[in-house]
Image (cartoon, rainbow, N blue to C red):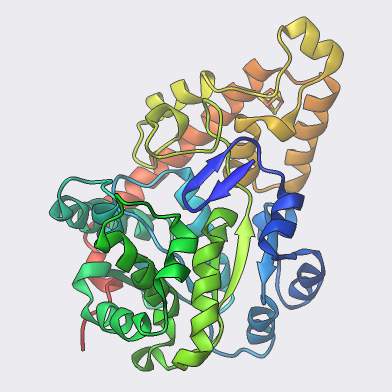
Length: 366
Ligand code: SF4
């Protein structure tokens, strides 16, 4: 396993990752969270596996205090189901009282050369990504979205924070070399400004903020937490979720179109991707009937577990039937494809309506 920022290779050993990154296993905090709210499926099913200081959020929910959740989005392309995982977590906290903040990092898309032209990323943000976020069901008055280069206060905050960050702190995150541009170096500071932005005075000042992330993004969190208190903010909390497997193997990635299902894929395309997916099934139907399959290493099961099935009993039956060999991959893929098609048809209707609502979700400069 190799984990660096934006670079995950091979099967991830989450137990080892907890040790390596020094984060806290979720179990104990989950018991406390369970006492103050109904847990989302991502928590019930072990998909969120670790945290830092989640107790600050549990306390805020319990005592009905103000808190926020922050999740960033890179607008270099349309959103996929890996991105949906972040939004689902934001919705869980929003349903428990949080304001949701979403910086759209058109600056990151450009400085890391994910797009050729920054205007393309900006247009993509307003025309595609923000309507998609709205269509995923975030609440109007409790969601605050901004496009990074269009929100001056982020850069003002980044400039202030930059005096507390050294080159070696940034280098430890990215592992820079001689090809690294100054924009990439400064983007590390902008990312920290994003994380701390819900605590700006105009949003009510310091408060608990939780940032759901993949474990590979933890170095950003460490940097933000390191400088938060000396910059007048509270240390942000974080939760860590398991990666969704790519349909053609490895971690899901938006840069490999057949590896991920995009929210704007047609039902037909999504069905094709699922029917061709790599599963945890045996070599032949006979073998699978005899030895069973392995849902714990199956991209189709990941979609069922993380996105498509709400009912825990139904999911457990699929798991058990797969393990025992009663369920074969062909029928399982068909069922997943049907559920996916239903989701995408509904999503498309919501997306049409969301296009007219973009302005209601944006933070406007005061
Ligand atoms: Fe995956 Fe379903 Fe095949 Fe089991 S039966 S390995 S869950 S596709």
